[in-house]
Structures are given as structure tokens and as C-alpha cells.
Image 1 (tube, rainbow, N blue to C red):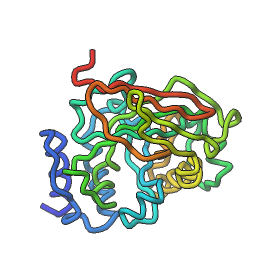
Image 2: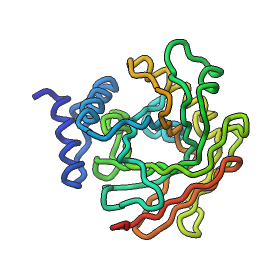
Image 3: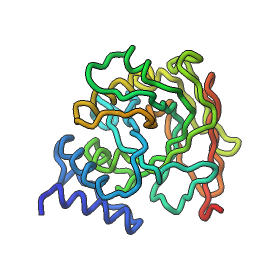
Image 4: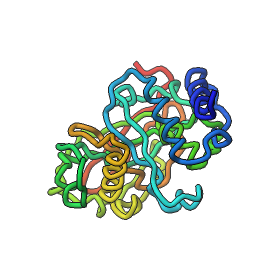
Length: 254
């Protein structure tokens, strides 16, 4: 069994048993191998792919992990939730507020800011519920990439706006857990502009020979710090110019 096989099995066992595992950086020593672990893990899933998520868009988080670029993971249909999120499906969940883009066109070939902007059908406020199969969130870049960029679940708001109606970089975000303000930030916190993050992902996905496709949802990255969650709490994010999105975390949602 190769080191990559061992990393796949370690993360898969954690997901199945609900018991976080030790990091996989002892087995996965570069980012290319980490993406191969991610690819093999995702190939085991049966739900349809709905899009991608971008992580590590904050300069502070990049510095913490000693990296100089974002990463990405894959979104699946069984990861989207609406009014309630089943906290029992998650191991170590945290939540962050983002802008999601839904694509009207494929993004392949030559890509520049204008091409990417024109490919966006609309934007929507979103909550990403990140999770880690690795105990204590003890992660490096290779650990999180292998673990599908620490993906968990995601929630999309009901407001849909074209990019002619607002500028993602100009937004401000406030996120509440109940009545408590737990996170705030701006569009500029996401790689300088959430559209910069989308351009990075479009080019990276193209170079992986798996380009972004029309109809896909793209979570462009956190607008502020992530916050821990607990059963029974309702998390609400307000993104100026775009709208609100909320979800209640329940042990056994009806």
C-alpha cells in the first residue's frame, strides 16, 4: 500500500466512524499528492458534484499555515442544506460567511478577469460549514487539501443578484450566532476581491483538466473569521448589498 493509499484510508475511516484521525502530513509530503488523495476520496462519493469551494483566501490564515496560495475542494449535492443543518453529520464544525457565485458558462481556455465576471449568472449569500476529519484541526496545507479542503456542508440564501447590481469587493459582512456578533469582515478580505478568488480557481481547475462548468456553485472564500457552532444555535450572516442567509444547527432536524 502506498503512502497515498494510506492517507486515503485514514481520512475515509475518520469520516465513516465519526472519530477524527491524526494528520496525514506524515504520508503526504507535497500539495500535488494531497490533491491526489482528495481526488481518490471524492471518487468514492455517489452524490452529484454541484461545484467547488475555495479555501485559504485570508492572508492571515495563509501566514498561519505557511502557504502563499489558496486551495480548493469539491461540493456535492448531499452537502447542501437549507433551514437546518444536521450537526450529527459533522465532527468538528465551524461556520463562515461567504459570497457564492453560480455560473452561466463554462470557464476553460484563456481566462482573465473580464471572462470570469461575464461567466457569473448571479451571486448569493452563503454559509460554509467547514469541518475537519483531522483531530483538533491540527492541519497544514497538505492535510486540508487531502481532506477536501476541510469541507462539510453549505447553505445558500434566497437572494440572487447579478454582478451588475453590486460589487463583491465592496461588501461588508456581519455574522451572528443567536444575538451575538461572532464574525465580521469585507469582500476585500477574500484575496482582495471574491472575483480574484474565482479567477484563481477557474485557472487552477482548468490546469487540473477539470474546468468549472455552467450551473456550478462556487463558494469563493470567507469574508471574515470562522466561528465554532453548537446544537440549537441559529447562525445568520448579513452581507451588504447582497442579502442574508441563516441556518439552525440541530441534532435531529425534522
